[in-house]
Structure formats: C-alpha cells, structure tokens
Image 1 (cartoon, rainbow, N blue to C red):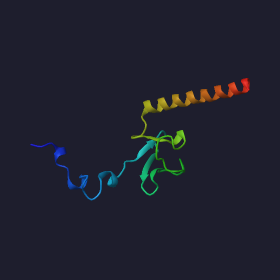
Image 2 (cartoon, rainbow, N blue to C red):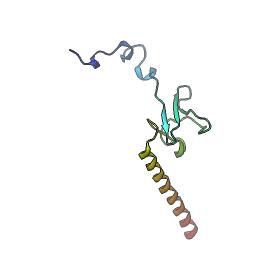
Image 3 (cartoon, rainbow, N blue to C red):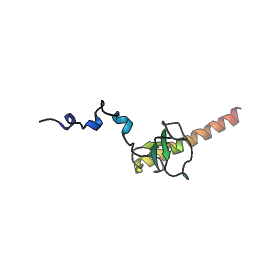
Image 4 (tube, rainbow, N blue to C red):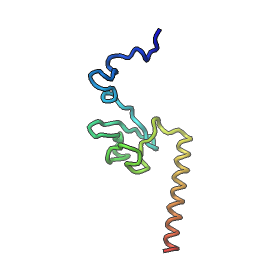
Length: 107
C-alpha cells in the first residue's frame, strides 16, 4: 500500500516539462468589500474584477495599493471579519483626528 502522495502524476513532477508553480491557475482573492481579484499573468499580479470598484495597478503584495482595496482574503469576508475591519477603520479615524488636533494645537 502506498499513500496518495507517493503517486504523483507526471504533470506535477518537478522534473517534468514545466515546474508546477509555473503552470498552476491561481484562485481569485477578495478585498474587504467582497469584490474578487483575479491573477492576470501578463499584468504580473492580481487585478480587480470590477473596474468601477478599483482601477489601478495590479496588486503584487499586501500594502502595494490603498488599504481600502487590498485583496487579502481567500474567501468573501464574514461578519466577524467585517466587524474587525470596521473597528480598525474607526481606530484609524480617531488616530487621524488626534494627529490633526495635535498639529493644530502644538503647531
């Protein structure tokens, strides 16, 4: 008896015609708004599937595009993730307001 991992097909063999990582289709990912981003090979990154939502450079790494549109989820965000994102947004608003007040009062 052998385990399934001992019976890899020739297509996924690293010594085959192309390394598996070069030929695999990447799954879409989601931004915080639940919009899908698909890997576009010729663009070299993930591109938003809804141009009205975000039209900009492809995402190649977290932090490369504005925070509101970063595609960081493997599935559409669930309720707990949305609540955490809203709390994070509220914290950032308070920090920006505090910074502005400090600049105005302290010069």
